[in-house]
Image (cartoon, rainbow, N blue to C red; front, side, top):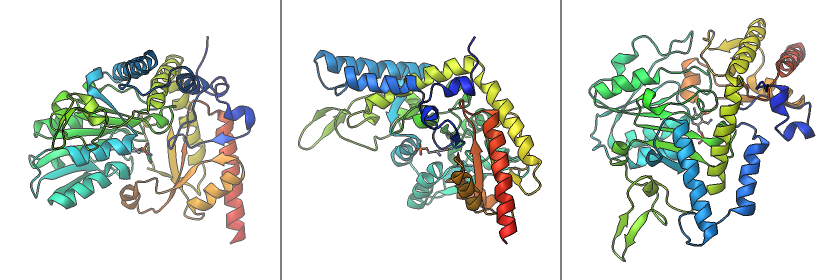
Length: 407
Ligand code: PMP
């Protein structure tokens, strides 16, 4: 039987046929795309391409049917209904759309609650909104040791809170936040909960009903799909409170010189020609990921991450961020050295065909919380092997020696 992960998975990615030695440890930024997903993308352009929802000829109807089938599949994949799923260009697009469009009768002094772990994409749209209406942003703090929510987080969500926007998992620490509990607390205070699942989607099974959120979004490129496509789950109650941010073709019923009437349902949030190929590829990626999970991918990655964490923590010159982590965190590890700058480490690794990311990872408030400006992040995905991790550690040791000797 097929066992997911490592060499067997790698055969499904063309990149390793041309560069068998390449060590890709940056899947938290974007995953590589398996051939079956690329084939779905190509098939659409070769045999099914037309403007969906526009034409009455068979090819256009086929494109529409494929798009709507992808909507249904992706809705099922996250435990939602098809009429609760809108397609966007990605998580950043979705979160801006929510911040710009939500009609919550904002009053000065109303509170928005975010966690310290937010990516800038789930911070800056709310910061701008707060500046516009005089809202107060309150933070769910983290435990500096584990990166989990601080014990007293519930106190931050008060009756003054109108909206909680939280990440399901941090793209820097990999910690998973207790979003179901947060949403429950928010609801009890009369507030909405919006979930940024961009980082979690590649690793966790999503269930919007169990999470109890009002909106949730993710990008296809972090779940082995292609770029330029995002999924935005919106309850029908939330849809009634959301004004379309983009207006234009495909989201209206009647337009005169002086007025327009919008369609009801999720299509009012999808102005313009949809990215049908990427949407079809996203559904194909969800199918592929399901197969991998059924064949044991999650266990494989947990083991690989655990072993790498052990190896890295043996190196006295490296410090992990956060220092402790639990087994539920995602397959990614961040670290820094007080002796060698994160950018030097990443550049040295890059020269040795190892791709990692160094910097603030679009989460500067989180790095400031630990008083860092840059950390190295390594992230693992289906195609990574134990050999990749060994190679990483060996080249990190070389880098450390080189940079400290040179001083
Ligand atoms: N939120 C989190 C937690 C992320 O990791 C990312 C991507 N790094 C985003 C939001 C933004 O996703 P995108 O760039 O695809 O819009």
